[in-house]
Length: 156
Image 1 (cartoon, rainbow, N blue to C red):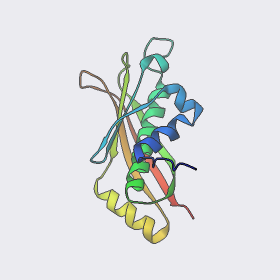
Image 2: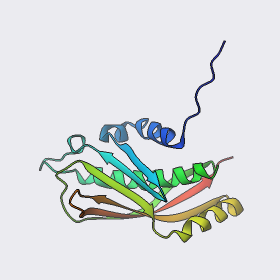
Image 3: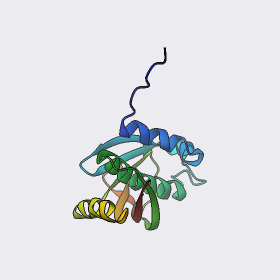
């Protein structure tokens, strides 16, 4: 008798997707929270440290890119939309070095764009949206900022 596998939640699916990519798995990201159009990822400094003892800039950029990508993936999954998501372009600013575990939060650059994205996907089968992310410090400061444009293309 074959047992049915337990359905995977969108968060479990995203976590598995991240860990299936070796460069991402090496950063050891953990999904901390997803709600109200925000996604927060955590990662240990020890897995992302550079020669100066602070967070590697490539890890900060990658985690912010992944957080924004993951936010879009979760939002589309929640709407029952099966689409491939690509980063089209991005801009990163490094403001302060990070000497602590990494905390990255992504959100929609403009909440109204969420509705336009869904409409465009349904009508044209593809759409783009701008998302933003930042690396937060425990003292409330911001260490890095990211703005990226993502493209979603319906599958099938």
